[in-house]
Length: 152
Image 1 (cartoon, rainbow, N blue to C red):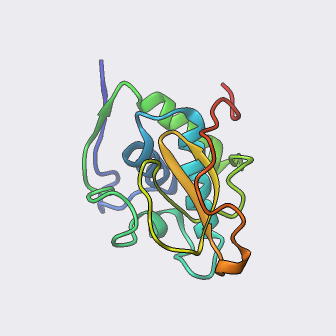
Image 2: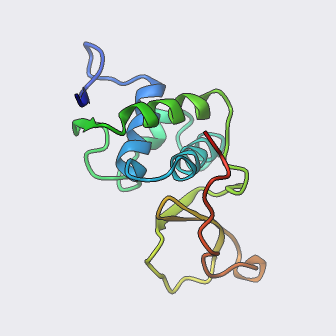
């Protein structure tokens, strides 16, 4: 039986946990645990940055940054228990050890002509990167995918 999570609370607002679950679900729900933890790491890196909103829901709901409809679309999948576990783990402090300061990611197969993308990790079908001044980029192409680091 599939779990269904739609809008939460009477005011239509979501808790930080629900927003993290939604980021992981819509950006990596068919992914590995490593991929979900890396997405969560990016969200938390943004929360801790002065350049982004200072809450999980603020980051996840920021226009044009995550999947369209991320805060309003229904979640219905047998993957939900894994997503919920990973979201709780990130909010308790777990981070993907290779994500570093990454605040961005894209689908792993895509390539972009920018010279400021320093890649730190490929996991769960996404390539994670830091934006740097071009002369500080030492990994301009995504590394080989790495899975199984976060375990469970």
